[in-house]
Structures are given as structure tokens and as C-alpha cells.
Image 1 (tube, one colour):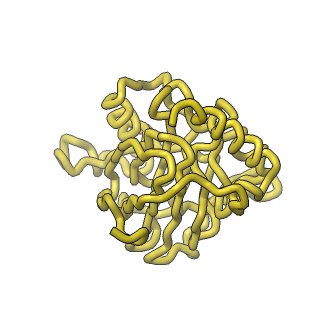
Image 2 (spheres, rainbow, N blue to C red):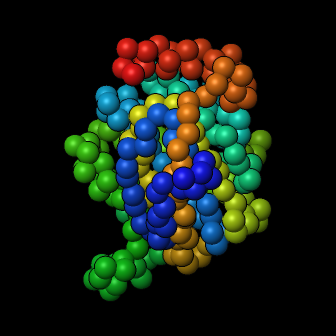
Image 3 (cartoon, helix red, strand yellow):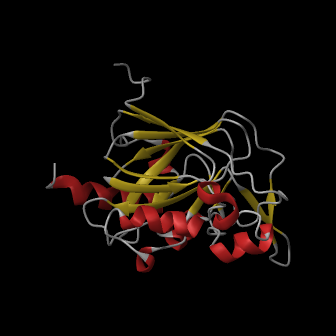
Length: 242
């Protein structure tokens, strides 16, 4: 099997959810097959679930508001969950969170209620996250601010946020190299600022590839001094575990 042959493939339908453990060194590629998808993500240390993705440290340590390559996703224990090694979209939201049942109901009225649509009812990000987290013994107290891949959100001078969707292209992808054994939790519900008038979440294609942790001269590792320190913490964490 070549390095370019995935060891796992799956398409998550629009409004769907997924969770798996991806081990240290493997690469996850997310592909927006139709253009305009939103993929919300949570991350947890698979061996110690109390450690999870930390949005404030990820942003302030890299002096950023959004994520792209060659940046990294930090944990709340000063370690690196994964690195963004490839990115054709160029801008991914880090601050808007996910939808909940009230937001979906207010935006789309009762058109997508279970009473009307049965199994095709309009899903929301928070409930999808909680369904997946329950499979791993986690619950509402374990929810933290999530990422939104493929969603570009900008701020004006007054701090008002707006989603920009005209740049979305079918085939856009982002690839993550995992530096820790990580529980990855995803859903494809609409972004909270989605400007679309109708409920039409898009799918995403997942591919997982074999690989290795970051080398010493890796661009993600060297992109910020804070990243280098977090990589050293991660390597120290695994030194006696391998």
C-alpha cells in the first residue's frame, strides 16, 4: 500500500456525524466534494479524555483568528493534537461554535421538525456532537469551542462577524497530520452564520493515510516558537509510551 492510498474512507452526509480514534502519525484528509460544506470538529486525547482542544491557546500562541497551513491545533495541556499540512481553502473558522436546536428552529421554523420529516429532520451541531460524545463516555460538560473547517468568517471594525461563502470550491481539501492519539468528533450541520435561506448541509469525504509524526524541520513545527515548545511537550509525553 502506497503512502497515497487511504487506509480508511468514508463520506459523511450533510447533517451527519462521525467519531473515531486516529493514532499518532496518521493523516486525515477532509474534502469538500460539492463546495460549501461546513465540518465542525472536536478533539480529545484518546488516552486521557480530559485533555481536549483549546481554542484560546491555539489562536493566541500563533497570533491568528483563523486556521490554515502550516498552523497547529493545541490541547489544553500544552501539546499538539495535529498540524495543518495541506489546505486549498485557506481560511477556517475557529470562533463561531456550532448550531443548537433553538437556532435551527428559529431560522427554518418548523419545516424540519421530526413530526414533519421523521428521520430526515433538521439536525443541529450541538446534538450531533453530544450523540457522538456519548459513545465515548463523554457528555455536555465535555463540550468545548469547536472548529469549523471550510467556513470563512471575517470581522468588521465593530467586531460583527460575517460568513463569506463565495470562495468555496468543489474539491477543496484540508489535510491534518496527527501528533497525538486523538479522538476526532465531526458533524456536517450548517454553520451558525450560514447565509443560505434553506436547510441544505453538504457532505464531506474523509480519507485517512498512514504516516509519521512531524520531523525536526517540519514547517508546522517551526511556524511559531509556541508550536516548537508544544511539539517538545508532545514528544516528551510519548517518550515512555512508545
